[in-house]
Image 1: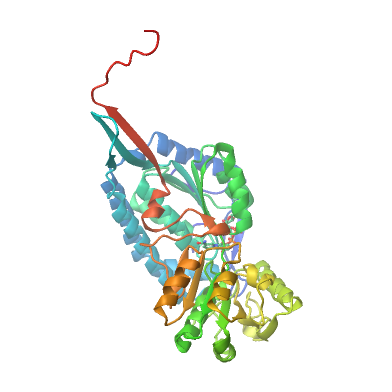
Image 2: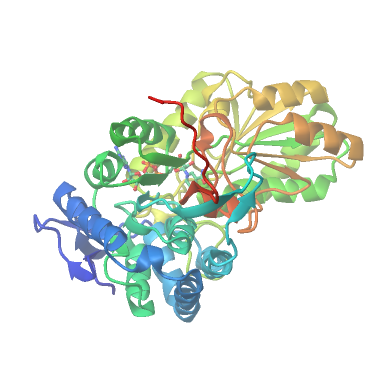
Length: 491
Ligand code: NAD
């Protein structure tokens, strides 16, 4: 089905230890394929290859137009392999193949966007305060980049890192989540076909605590870019301190979705569902924290319950299926733990809170869409990321109260709200302290706009112009055209 090996210095390789990992289909628990399970020694080999390719290879000094053309070729190959990539992504993650196809559309667009940006920056001349001098600012590639990605959007998250790094002239070592490596293996194959020079694109498979930790610690890595959970992000930040490498972090979210009394009821309802249930709620920007104003609350909860009852679970490859399984048995345990905590804390369960009864789904890691009401700000179900098909609903009275409560979180990735009042749109969008704020919409992102979090949701931004800047260092080049004697010392 796919070659289960790593790419180091242009060669496909098994793990040095010979270890392998079984990749599981979350839909039915069946084995998909065996892949190499690399360790620290494989990561070190890949880092050394990326170091050589950066320090002695042609890539950092390849003219930007040529880098752009190779990245454009990779976008063509992603388009050619669109359906196969989508199939692999759905087998690996359980998400519906319709969603995976959308991801692949986006991914081709991400490579095209950064190919387009690669040759647009010719540096900048700034006003020097000294006569007969010139000051030039140039951006240069940061160097060797370790890129650690999560299991929920395996190739999408990898491409957010890969495309700008290559556009900037960096060399990379990719490390996908050990449980969802298939599409990242495939893109490494496509990068090889596109013709990137040896050692520019490396791929190491294996557990985070070994391969990821090596990428974070190794002094030959100049930047580590990580998408995943907060606890892992903190570990990586500490590990990166050894050589003060640059750190880019895209961490979790607990994203408020606020429905004011003057909202368009039907649209808000539809978007609350869209905001949570794609990929069974395993989305960093899921709007799982729903806040509804008093006047609409009861009617909204009733309508939400009715729609949630009709969500169709099943095999993501079947027509009509709207929601697949969770990623793993261990992750379903975590979701179940949060449901139990919510009940202990006094949230009222309206729907779900259990695995589906359908025997056809019994082998997969399914969980029913779950709705809690009477939730309060201090509950863990409101404050912590569940990462599953679980909504908590809070009731609020005033705009000021909604904003204050929405902001009272350690996270700051995204938030959205529904209103018809233009003054309120202006006030609330500025008052909410999140990296992205949606007005009358939810969960929209595109490559032209930067993405990232306030507070503990992360550090830095991916996508957009800023997503490219993350992979560059800025150098100030100062030239004195007519140096004059100073004659200060020992005159
Ligand atoms: P995770 O933190 O468990 O793992 C993410 C990656 O880090 C994996 O590749 C893993 O192998 C690696 N890793 C684990 N321990 C490591 C260590 N000690 N050192 C280095 N690397 C290590 O996260 P996950 O469960 O795969 O993904 C879910 C999380 O990702 C959620 O919190 C979600 O919100 C977040 N996420 C954020 C965004 C965003 O854009 N902000 C996007 C997608 C997912």
